[in-house]
Amino acid sequence: MHQPTKVYALPAAELKSMIDKDHTLGYLIFKRLADIMDKRLKIRTDLLLEAWLEAFGASKVTPQ
Image (cartoon, rainbow, N blue to C red; front, side):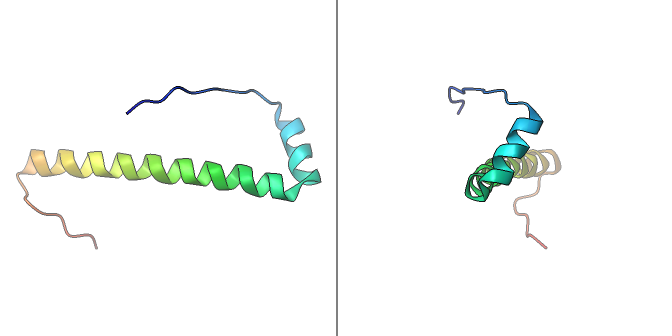
């Protein structure tokens, strides 16, 4: 489930300057960030539902 990760550090002011100069770059950065957050929240929610189902003996959860 875990994948190798590369981490890059960039000062906030430099990142903001890059995004101000290139809005397409800014869009791509924030789109990727939103995709990562969406994936992680889905995994978290699935694990939480699994734990609830196990803890409370429920066989089905219906989303509201």
